Image (cartoon, rainbow, N blue to C red):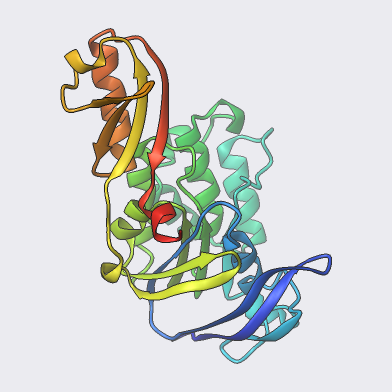
Length: 282
């Protein structure tokens, strides 16, 4: 089993420190959710484990090897960043073939990945013509073509609708039984759905590490500016310019929008008023 050990890791960009004194020890497979607000240091944390960033201080090893200095340690990892990182002028089939060569995947591995991510019907479509959900699946494909010991998924469901996001999470869950999977998010509800262990990064430091069930959950609160909303959603209360509505999770926002659209309510704005993760880190 792969083990990852970080002791006092401090690093950043161009001499500016982003991560401060990070220490973790992981020696069991599973999904480790990395939670934090935008700008907290999640991406820097992923780039450090992937061996992209040099440490300013401390030590980091994957199976006793420093990933920045040892290619064999970096090869144990695969990293899905915010950016798609695929040639957008190509067809899906060409993209899969290209990364199969780069990842040294055989035909059976390619076929398995295409089936796992349900890419069969879009293999001959150009990447630019795909929906956001389909594009995300193609990006995932390049990570899943060959088995690695450590998977780093940096906010893989950003900008996806709740249904597609759920499908992506199921795909990732399928590979977490025998590997270490780091999965970053700024959504406490998503974290609870996909993982049991969580690292919360705040201002470049670990604010919490442990069982996600120990983190208190609150309501997700949105504000809606609309005409006659109380006729459609009577539980919403008017507060200033906004109707305030408590939801179980951000995924429920789309259901509210659909309900308002069906009732032909004219909506001027929907905004997040309270987020449990934000409240937790105050």
